[in-house]
Length: 125
Image (cartoon, rainbow, N blue to C red; front, side, top):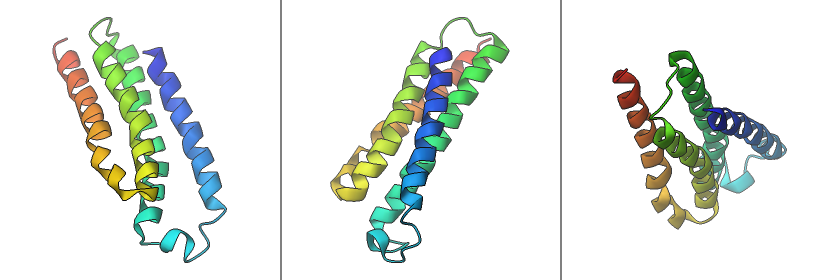
Protein backbone atom coordinates (compact mmCIF):
# COMPACT_ATOMS: atom_id res chain seq x y z
CA UNK A 1 0.00 0.00 0.00
CA UNK A 2 1.43 3.32 -1.10
CA UNK A 3 0.25 5.17 2.01
CA UNK A 4 2.42 2.91 4.18
CA UNK A 5 5.45 3.74 2.03
CA UNK A 6 4.76 7.41 2.68
CA UNK A 7 4.17 6.74 6.39
CA UNK A 8 7.46 4.86 6.62
CA UNK A 9 9.51 7.54 4.92
CA UNK A 10 7.80 10.34 6.85
CA UNK A 11 8.56 8.47 10.08
CA UNK A 12 12.23 8.20 9.04
CA UNK A 13 12.32 11.94 8.39
CA UNK A 14 10.71 12.72 11.75
CA UNK A 15 13.11 10.34 13.47
CA UNK A 16 16.06 12.11 11.88
CA UNK A 17 14.71 15.53 12.90
CA UNK A 18 13.99 14.34 16.44
CA UNK A 19 17.50 12.94 16.69
CA UNK A 20 19.02 16.15 15.38
CA UNK A 21 17.15 18.27 17.91
CA UNK A 22 17.90 16.05 20.89
CA UNK A 23 21.45 15.60 19.63
CA UNK A 24 22.06 19.26 20.38
CA UNK A 25 21.69 18.52 24.09
CA UNK A 26 22.66 14.87 24.64
CA UNK A 27 26.17 15.76 25.77
CA UNK A 28 24.82 17.33 28.96
CA UNK A 29 25.05 14.71 31.68
CA UNK A 30 22.13 16.14 33.62
CA UNK A 31 19.98 17.04 30.61
CA UNK A 32 16.40 15.94 31.31
CA UNK A 33 17.51 14.48 34.62
CA UNK A 34 20.49 12.44 33.43
CA UNK A 35 20.95 9.46 31.14
CA UNK A 36 18.83 7.04 33.16
CA UNK A 37 15.97 9.41 33.94
CA UNK A 38 12.39 8.66 32.89
CA UNK A 39 12.21 11.75 30.66
CA UNK A 40 15.41 11.02 28.81
CA UNK A 41 14.53 7.34 28.32
CA UNK A 42 11.11 8.27 26.90
CA UNK A 43 12.70 10.82 24.54
CA UNK A 44 15.15 8.16 23.30
CA UNK A 45 12.33 5.63 22.92
CA UNK A 46 10.22 8.12 20.95
CA UNK A 47 13.15 8.84 18.66
CA UNK A 48 13.81 5.17 17.89
CA UNK A 49 10.06 4.44 17.59
CA UNK A 50 9.96 6.68 14.54
CA UNK A 51 12.54 4.47 12.83
CA UNK A 52 11.23 1.12 14.07
CA UNK A 53 7.60 1.68 13.15
CA UNK A 54 8.59 3.44 9.96
CA UNK A 55 10.52 0.32 9.02
CA UNK A 56 7.52 -1.88 9.79
CA UNK A 57 5.33 0.28 7.53
CA UNK A 58 7.92 0.13 4.78
CA UNK A 59 8.25 -3.66 5.14
CA UNK A 60 4.47 -4.00 5.00
CA UNK A 61 4.20 -1.96 1.80
CA UNK A 62 7.03 -3.87 0.12
CA UNK A 63 5.62 -7.24 1.20
CA UNK A 64 2.20 -6.32 -0.22
CA UNK A 65 3.97 -5.48 -3.47
CA UNK A 66 6.08 -8.65 -3.57
CA UNK A 67 3.17 -10.96 -2.75
CA UNK A 68 0.89 -8.90 -5.01
CA UNK A 69 -1.85 -8.91 -2.39
CA UNK A 70 -4.83 -7.24 -4.00
CA UNK A 71 -7.32 -7.16 -1.14
CA UNK A 72 -7.65 -7.57 2.58
CA UNK A 73 -4.87 -5.21 3.57
CA UNK A 74 -6.84 -2.09 4.51
CA UNK A 75 -7.16 -2.96 8.21
CA UNK A 76 -3.48 -3.87 8.67
CA UNK A 77 -2.49 -0.73 6.76
CA UNK A 78 -4.56 1.54 8.98
CA UNK A 79 -3.44 -0.16 12.19
CA UNK A 80 0.25 0.08 11.27
CA UNK A 81 -0.09 3.78 10.48
CA UNK A 82 -1.88 4.33 13.80
CA UNK A 83 0.99 2.53 15.54
CA UNK A 84 3.58 4.64 13.74
CA UNK A 85 1.80 7.86 14.65
CA UNK A 86 0.90 7.08 18.23
CA UNK A 87 4.00 5.30 19.59
CA UNK A 88 6.38 8.28 19.29
CA UNK A 89 3.57 10.61 20.40
CA UNK A 90 2.87 8.62 23.56
CA UNK A 91 6.61 8.38 24.28
CA UNK A 92 7.10 12.14 24.02
CA UNK A 93 3.94 12.90 25.98
CA UNK A 94 4.99 10.42 28.68
CA UNK A 95 8.37 12.10 28.95
CA UNK A 96 6.74 15.23 30.28
CA UNK A 97 3.67 13.83 32.02
CA UNK A 98 4.12 10.28 33.24
CA UNK A 99 0.38 9.62 33.38
CA UNK A 100 0.40 9.42 29.57
CA UNK A 101 2.24 6.09 29.95
CA UNK A 102 -1.19 4.53 30.43
CA UNK A 103 -1.84 5.15 26.72
CA UNK A 104 0.90 2.80 25.53
CA UNK A 105 -1.74 0.14 24.92
CA UNK A 106 -2.97 2.13 21.90
CA UNK A 107 0.20 1.96 19.77
CA UNK A 108 1.05 -1.51 21.07
CA UNK A 109 -2.35 -3.00 20.20
CA UNK A 110 -2.50 -1.16 16.88
CA UNK A 111 0.92 -2.47 15.84
CA UNK A 112 0.32 -6.02 17.08
CA UNK A 113 -3.14 -6.04 15.50
CA UNK A 114 -1.81 -4.75 12.19
CA UNK A 115 0.95 -7.35 12.05
CA UNK A 116 -1.38 -10.18 13.11
CA UNK A 117 -4.06 -9.18 10.60
CA UNK A 118 -1.49 -8.98 7.83
CA UNK A 119 0.04 -12.34 8.69
CA UNK A 120 -3.44 -13.84 8.73
CA UNK A 121 -4.08 -12.35 5.28
CA UNK A 122 -0.86 -13.49 3.62
CA UNK A 123 -1.04 -16.96 5.18
CA UNK A 124 -4.43 -17.36 3.49
CA UNK A 125 -2.89 -16.85 0.03
